[in-house]
Length: 380
View 1 (cartoon, rainbow, N blue to C red):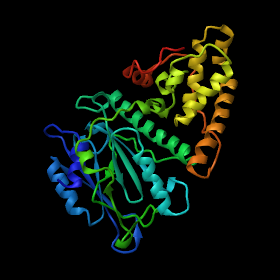
View 2 (tube, rainbow, N blue to C red; view 1 turned 60 degrees about the vertical axis):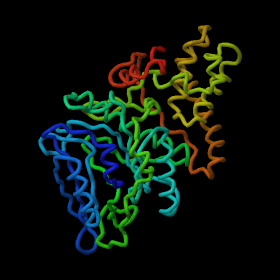
View 3 (cartoon, rainbow, N blue to C red; view 1 turned 30 degrees about the vertical axis):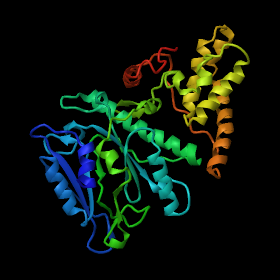
View 4 (cartoon, one colour; view 1 turned 45 degrees about the horizontal axis):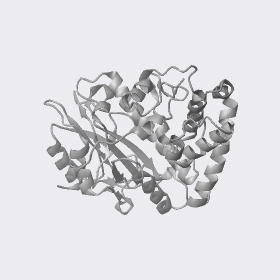
C-alpha cells in the first residue's frame, strides 16, 4: 500500500452510504507566479479518492478533507464524521535565518508531540495529525457541541505547540488557526507549489516545488492507535458562537500527577517555608515544559489545601502568585535555554484571562470530568 493510501486509511473516517469525501487541487499558473486555481472533487469511497490524488500529484498541490460530508458542500454544517485532529506548523513561524534551520526546528517540534501521531513534512512546514479517542470524535448524528468540543481541542493543540516553541527556542509565535472541522490538508506524495518558504502564491517553476512526505514510519501509520490527549487539557478553550476564549476556572488546569514523584509524596507540603515550596512547585512544572498558567493554578491548588488559614489566603493573592511564577520562569528559562542554545527572548508568555469564581462549567468542565480522576477539578 502506498504512503498516500496508508495515510488516508489511518485518518479518514469510515463513511456510511451516500456520504462523500472531498479532494482539493490547487493548480499553479502556466507561467510565472500567481494565486493559482483551487477546485474541489467529490468521491463516494476511499479507493477512487486515493487514485485521483495519485494521478494528480505531479500537476500541482493536492489536498484532502479528513472528514466525510453530506450534501457535497464542504461546510462545517455538512460534516458527518471526523476522527483525527490536525495542526499546521509553518517554517516562517520558527526562529533562525535560513530556511533549512527553520525547517529542521519545525520537524523537531512536530515529532516531539508526546503521543502517537502522524507527522507530514509539508514542504514549507509540518502537519501533525492525532487519531482521537472515540469520545472526542465527530460521528453521524453528533450535535453542535461535539463539533465545538472537537474544534476546542484543535485550538488547544495549536496553543500547546506555540508554548513548546517558546519553551524550546525562546521564540514567541502565532501559528495559523487550522481547527476547522471541514479544513483540507496536504497529502503524502503531493507537491507544495509555493514560490518560496514565505510566499503565498504558486509558481510555474517546478524546480521550486517541494515534495510532501510522511515523516512518521509507514508501520506506525498503519498501526496508528488513538492518542492520549491529556497533555492538551490545560490548553482547552471554550468554543462559543463568537469564537474561542479562555474559560479556565482557578486551579482547573493543574493535576498533582504533573509533579515529580518526590513532590507528589509530600503534597501539599504543609510544613516548612511555604513561599519556598511555591517557588519549587512552579520551577518543577516549568522545567517540565508546562505553561505558566498551569504553574499558577498549581499554586492556587496547593494553597487551598493548606491547614493554616493565613497560608490558604494566599490562594487569592494574584500579585504574589504571578510574581512567584514569573520569578520561576526567569530561573527555569535561563537553565533550559543554556542547554538548548542561545535565547531569543526571555519574557514570560502572556497570562490567559480567567473567569471569576471557582465554578467549572461548559466544555472545559466536560473535558476535566472526562479524564477524572487524573485532575483536581473540585479544588476551589
